[in-house]
Image (cartoon, rainbow, N blue to C red):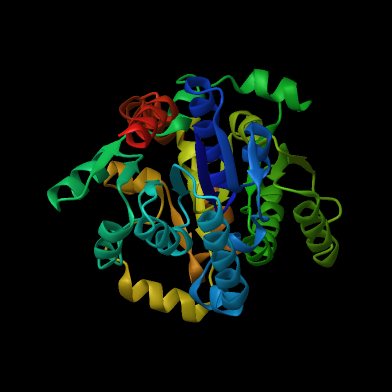
Length: 378
């Protein structure tokens, strides 16, 4: 059986890799090809094109790469026309994958979309396109399955793979030992995202916030996990530009879970990393900055009160969200220090995060693989 698969960013690469491993475990002779990151390639996916271009985010930013993105999608359609897979799986990246899925489904190829677009939050009109494009929607959260079924679409909640991979009770001391970090220092993790545009926009406010925190807590050591050497180089260049060469910070690559588990507080770019931080039961400060035109367009369309998954899952403001004009060094530092100074709030947050974690505990990759292969045999 041949399966086509496309993921568009680091979080999709992580989910795609877990899914590929589960599929191969059930069907060892499966062939997988498409677009993925290093984890998917290592898991056995044959890469047809690099994933970097699909990691562009934001309406204005996408427009600047529109011709390249459309060219890649046309090339994929031709490839899958010449060598049709038995099933195609789009992992997140709905703006790219839904149109690809529609074209492939029209050719008679069965299609699965893994990770629901946030149609319950904004752009609900995409439900019509999903109905035309997708044979089966696999959702990560229970409320999403309900949402689709109430509207007559086939959907199954498989839970989130990370809920099974991350322990209910993290071990910060063990994580620090693995990373070679002091067990006695206060560790603040700076996680500015995986996309170049995120790092370019967030590196300066994150690093200046770190400098401010050091003025109040001299025992703080900062850590950061980044996706590649280029991202680490960007952070080092920003440190030099801001004259922060004495800032105590250690950079890692490919160690995001160890870094989150080791941290006392996490300052992060909004995205899947917020869910991972929640599963590690860590207090966090969520931040994000977009091109202003993109921001105002999205603000007019979004129908939910929160942007981060912990707050969305809880239906309440569990963690601060510092977006756009609120994403300043002063505000970020204040929110970090507030967590460090409020033990009662930390205890309550840990209990709530544990409750949310338990609600997501399903064997997501295995469940998803079972439904995918059943669809392929139908």
